[in-house]
Length: 92
Image (cartoon, rainbow, N blue to C red):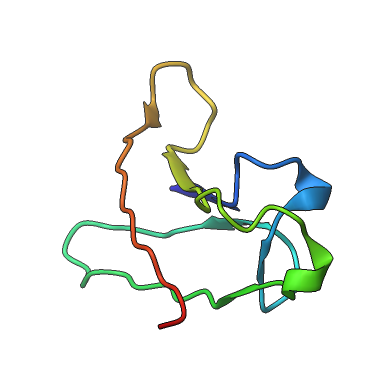
């Protein structure tokens, strides 16, 4: 499967507030090899929130997206789902 992760996807690329630790980019592309009879696959990516002084918008949620597609680019073979997970973390 071809996988693409987008962090803070509702913001323009240069204004994104969350970046991946490795490469300091707001997105990741990779290939996930899956085969019948193999154990489940896990892939960990570490992300961080940029310093508050680097951006103005501190209230809107950080939206993430993950898309998976079968290789070959054939139309109709894109795997898509939309799941919303929301958590609010703040200082107490």
